[in-house]
Length: 240
Image (cartoon, rainbow, N blue to C red; front, side):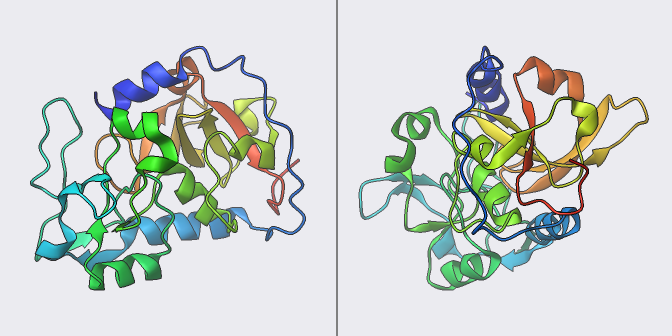
């Protein structure tokens, strides 16, 4: 199934889910809306060149299936691959379970690791057991965790516990997130219209590409999928 189809199925009925207990975050670094967006933009605009060694379609040495989103990945019904071997590519690719810094991603390329690893329903079933240590990249919650300077990757099952839930979507500020439990998350960058019907968000692992993107999304469509707005507890400079 495509990523968009997955998020539709996964998010259905989640709006009434109880939030996980809050986690104390005083030891975590404080961040600002500007620093979050700066980090997001660094991932989106990062330029790199992949080699044949960085493209992989098969099992890694631990028996975990890896499919990089290079241009040869054209599986029917799935979001196609995009990056080209031997060419300059832009944006850090999606990797299931990925939490690479940009420096770690570049070092992984030089070491011959796989550049990204697409989502599949089997990986969703296996969760952490499907994360390959022989791939580099970033997934949706790993991306948020890096933008918030968290010490590890917090999953979509955990992020809400680090946050204050927002009473209204109108309260969203840059650096906040829209999250669906155990499914997907987006980094809010701003509104695209005065009526707050269209929002601008960074994300990875959703159409149109397996990479960090920024685009305009219909807010009502996201609401219909069960997304909920949250603010990181250590966010500075945002109205509480």
